[in-house]
Image: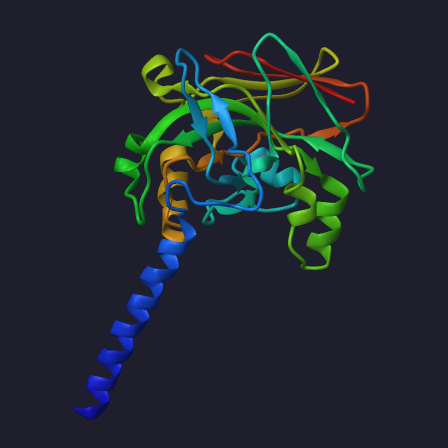
Length: 261
Ligand code: MN
């Protein structure tokens, strides 16, 4: 009895501490900070509003042929995820070609063209049937990868971070609200480098659909409005060097044009 009351007291105290901790994470309006942090945002097509980015999640090996080329078995094992920092976003306006800096440390810099879903709401343990109701819109993006560093870390059973989660590793276009485009479950996805087609597949070849990705991801993390999800790349990833121009395409979205400088 005594022990039980102690546990209850402890739980109440812990709850209070957690609540206080949460309160300190979100600054009250007008809070003074010693320096300014920019909010990472992406333009929204057909709107004067911009989409604020909370987190960038990426799914790995979500097309069977790409899983095979990366040396793994493409059977439907649970999907796995990694993150990029939200300020890894490099916005690329449709009709323009953005200069994308070749990053430090790598000698094998790879493109991965991907469909990107942007969430307007979230939650935990979201059922696949409910998942698409949380999607605000979609865009096209590149999950740029320092492949040599990713592989070296993988070989040593160390985190992929340095290969995937570096500055400007997430070039992407504007967010297209679902009301304008519907949901993307099929359609061509491709990438050209200097006019030569390198990647060419169909969104319907994803192992895990966007709805299933959201559902699985929400078991591991509480998803929230502002989260964006890179949905994996098809096969035939490969390197670019300075001077190369990448042109990404997904049916129903404007092309993404990036030059490596
Ligand atoms: Mn990827």
